[in-house]
Length: 334
Image (cartoon, rainbow, N blue to C red; front, side, top):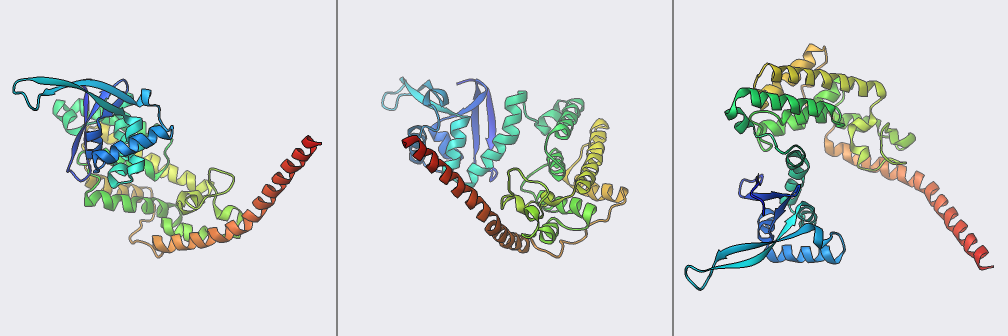
């Protein structure tokens, strides 16, 4: 396997897995997969067999057999060679879905963010390494990352969360990060319409309204999960306001990077409020009157009522289609 290695550390800090980089993807052995997902090698082997039997992946594509030389177990000073199977990222993710462990969820998040950045750009930001190489390298890459966040298709407060992750001392498990992630969405929403995210959904979801009151959703009808996302209820004016707030925040971030100002997590938390105050917005100073659980209960109830109304028409259309097919079959038989 190639000499290039990406070191992946699990969130609990208990494991450091070496991902072997070769041919535009990463590779692991069954033993390494077992350590990654905190399960047995036998369990990993069982999942791999099932994946191939189901035709989910092509063995000739996702497996790379390498000759490995090891010391002979019975004869001193003698070596032996054996073929070892390495599995690529597609297989790693497929196994992760089947294992269904917290480690699997963590690795999928890592694969879609840091690892994706590495595979596309050839590197991922390592703040300590870049700072030790010299300030200009660190801030040049930081500025590029901020601009990449800005040009992405992600919207509104999610961009702020991505920006927050560029902090020099970023740690997803720290109390500061958890507090920020839990409050930034509500701060942004409150600045625009004086509701927390839960309050907004609770007040606007209504089975009697067209599309339950949602203004944005992907398919022909809103799904239950879409009905629990606050931004899906915003008007065009409110969406524009959120965009302006976040745009101003990213302007500030770019300026800090250009000035080579290192920003910690605490700094970003402070500046969220400062920027909202500078634009004359009202600040949220409490957790709101509606809990997330209250919001979810109401959405579930309204969605059930809405579904009962809309499915009746869907069922009619379905029966109509079935009848049409039956008629065509009869005509074909005559």
